[in-house]
Length: 612
Image 1 (spheres, rainbow, N blue to C red):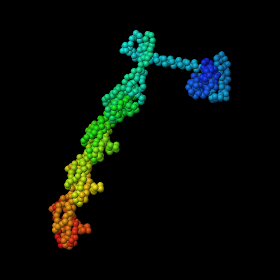
Image 2 (cartoon, helix red, strand yellow):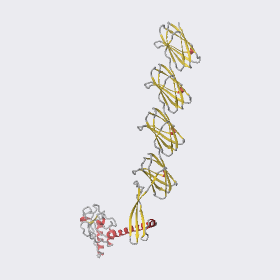
Image 3 (cartoon, helix red, strand yellow):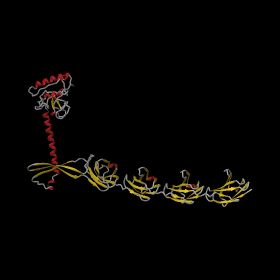
Image 4 (cartoon, rainbow, N blue to C red):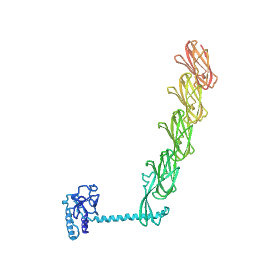
């Protein structure tokens, strides 16, 4: 603090008011006493320097004041220099001599004399000033109350007649509404809003003030799939209660009569936690709600005024799928339709997607009982294929992605595994990725032919056959016409026909090899009925020498192969029907193997033998 400020205090003749006492000894303080002032209690906590114990006896505080401008005493610290101290002392003596008639003394403490950092020279005029401040505050508060009463008189002038108040005795009955807790905060009133009324009644004889508390509902209950309101003022807050009947994902779409305005929609759980808060300008939001729980919704004005409408998208109950198709209607953004499906058979299932709005899109997902996701795809992909187990329950979810639409999903259910009996089997391919499974036990050992047929040449399917050890023996397409496989008599094989393009009815013919036959005489014959057919014969030469084998056929457009092997599997001849004949030297008594193999077209053949 500057010296000039100290001098101005002295020149004004300010002094400690009488009656201020030390808080410990109750000794009246006088001008010139060194004092310590509690920072918390201020003038109510003044101590003589020697009586200050370091703790205030009233508040227990330990902090003391360092007297900024305008307080009741001047604190001289060792921040002033010796030269400043001497100048101040001279000026103070001069002032004291000019004011001998004043009722105060002065004392200046040198920095060298300070034994306590809070040693003060005090000149007090604060009691007088504090009293003035208190009077001013009292008058302001009184003025506020009077204004409030006058406003209340105007707003409640009609209350007297409705409440049958005797106006001869009561000249004024006014009510002042005191606002309840602002619901904008996270802690809101769950049931009602309490309104406190300050009621003043003035009669001929007296004025009575009483406090009346009334409890009224502060919210609107929502019992439909939409609700509306009107925002007419700034910071307006409308409160609603909503109890959903179904658990699931709900959609709150916000509408307004004035697109230039904006408001905030907030959804709170029953425990008061905020689930979502979003503006009209964002369009809306999805919120997951539980059935039979009451949620609180606040609509808060943000900018402008308007009439608002909130559309609630309500989810459907989880439905069980019965049959080979199910359908639904998507009406709001983020909608989720949930289904359960129990697979009737084990195998590969197909879910094909359809809609009445090709501009829309939705997602499809299927989850097993252990929550493992088996498929997740889009309507735009057409469908999905999933392997399911008979008797297992699966969860299916159809979720809106873009636009609204009515959707239909067709389920392709696999056929039972069928056993093949005879020389042909057939089936019907009705859905994409369909797999028909068969088992086949080879009746004979030899080369088998599987020839493929269909009623739709634009379609295609795959054919595969595997041995009992799962080793694949053949994999080919319908368009290749068929396949040839060597099988062993009595063994079981797995055959799978799988859709590749389009749908069709298919038939597969099995060419079963003939039994091995012995040649008796000098001729033998057979019937070639399928591609790659092999007829096997044994021949024992009656004499040693050169033998001639002449080939004949019922179909000159056909062709077959003639092969002959010795007992050690050495090849003795390999030629074609088209060559007409072949000559082979044989040994008497030796057994030889002859194979006639189809090469082109079908025919009946006859082969004659000329011995040496």
